[in-house]
Length: 84
Image (cartoon, rainbow, N blue to C red; front, side, top):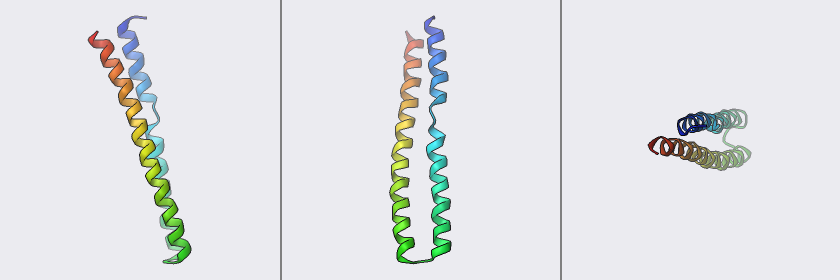
């Protein structure tokens, strides 16, 4: 495999990093959070659940950032191959 082919393969791999999954999950959690609030109103249970959802969403943000970092590192490796 040539260096050019390796760079192309790395670019394809970078596109396969599932960065969208984390963001989609966060969106689903936001929907759940809104539904909990709608069902329970401003209650202690709703507040506790919302706190847990907020923690999960912060963790998802961290995962999303980590996945984006993986994608960028793979792309940088591809660019490095092209520069020789």
